[in-house]
Image (tube, rainbow, N blue to C red; front, side):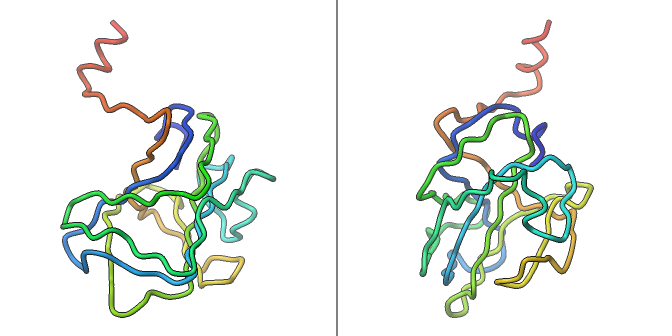
Length: 161
């Protein structure tokens, strides 16, 4: 996520995904790990570790067997971290998600949007390099102590008049 997309410093305790209209209402994943860290580039390279500013990659969730909450189409579901991540509000935010396999036939799909550049990379489990760049970015909402507030365009405009 670009710093300009986030805007403020926040202690991120969880994030939410918005379930797509297709797929199952929940998913179960083996060996799920989520890392967060800071990046300086607005585009990701194919080597995962090279995308991070040194020393900022933190494991925020680790589970040998993780099942998401069951939600209906177009509803948000939360993924709560074991360890919160402090985002400084200045650098770009990297969210790295890995799992060894999905359990059963569950296929939980989430909404994405076109980020316009190489802002998402995909690779095989356990590898250090990605196979593919994408401008297709998952629609994620950050949740935390200093949570971002939503505003209409008119509220933002009136704040600067």
